Length: 184
Image (cartoon, rainbow, N blue to C red; front, side):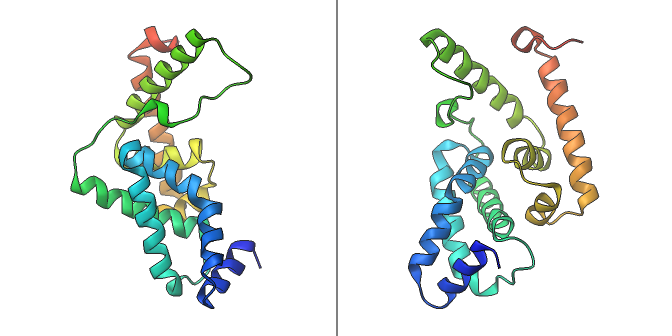
């Protein structure tokens, strides 16, 4: 039995500390998904809403899918509900850590933040269904099967949307070769 299932069972038995461990284990991925779908400003509220929904729906968790996939489906739905309530806003590039090795000069950090801001802007231009599968696969590293469970799509649809999302993103980036230096 996996560790998440043990914590779910303990939570259902009345041990609230076990649910706190589930939150600690999955809060980063839930927050990142929320931030990419609704923006950094609203991500914390969406993440909290997702965990609250998960807690109340925990008796209905059957364990047919991994807990993380089940939780991310709830987080996705909470984010989509939030998006429906308000207009889209761009993501805050400072809300995500900078990738890379070792210390960077201030100029390199500014350049990296600017590139990240522009990339996030391009990702935000993708169709929402394309953006979701792209983020889940290429940013969060979920398997195709996990993405199918989170999105409630057939596996073939996940692969097709991911392929189209990557192509759409490449096209968006190529339109601005000054920033990205991609060949035509």
